[in-house]
Length: 372
Ligand code: DGT
Ligand code: MG
Image 1 (cartoon, rainbow, N blue to C red):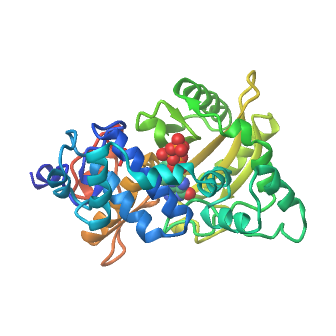
Image 2: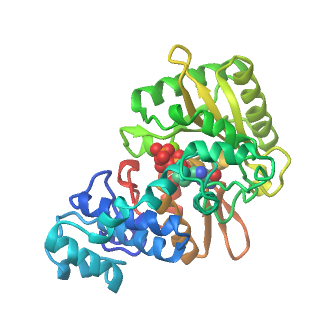
């Protein structure tokens, strides 16, 4: 079929390529990722995206790259800048700019600041400009009431949904206080343990819910930064979904399992998702016994958009970005909250994950191959 034919390492969109977690050119990818991150931290989005595209393209390439000529054939690598550094890498095994970035103080500081939940590149830059160099400086900075109003961004390039998601300013202190816990990666079995516990609690207030653990876990990552769970109930309408999200986070809070609620959306914000079909709670979950704080994102969806939500929240971010672009090229609009025709805004319902790909005219790609 034409969908099958589209599946190729040199295809235009990441959602048409198989991208394993670890690829034959992993070291090159990691060195390029430093350049990409440095561009992001410098707020040079265009260059960052250009590197991100080159990286995604290399991740899907099934062989170790031997020559610049070989590299040039890859989508998004032909560009002068990318090809130049790749050529240097192929010659010496090292990208000199990557090395100097990693040795520089500014990169290290901005990396540390932006690792705090709620602090994005923009805020990290402001903090740096205001002479903050350590997390202690940042804490002091936020304690000063004159500075407390500094806007906090979320690392979210979502164009269509939930523009209104902002981490409330007061949570910066929470993030900072929990920084040591939150920076510890979560092994797979703990992700599963938390999900089991959460679903057990949910069963008490609403029997019969379905869920999928999404995010990096689903893509096969051995350790995650947070836990993303997409939840639905066969009989839930938009109202019930919002209610459930609220009720459930209340219950978890009362039981002490959720210690902080970072954001709750879909409550009374019509813009949060079309017709409010998705409600989200970004929480801090405390695992009884270990007492360790973990970030837990709960995404409640009505059944009709459950599978688009699962695909959206499985990521990767680049995979999802290209799903949107690919959909657009077919006059469709894709995001976590559904698929619609751009011509008449009619909704197309996906009844399975495979259905999502089929509707978009894409070959199915296994979650572990979506690591673009
Ligand atoms: P990590 O860092 O180990 O948690 O890795 P991921 O890949 O699980 O990253 P995460 O949890 O930030 O996001 C998982 C996917 O969900 C990602 O592809 C983008 C998507 N996503 C994250 N935040 C939002 C959001 O606010 N709205 C929507 N629609 N999607 C989001
Ligand atoms: Mg995640």
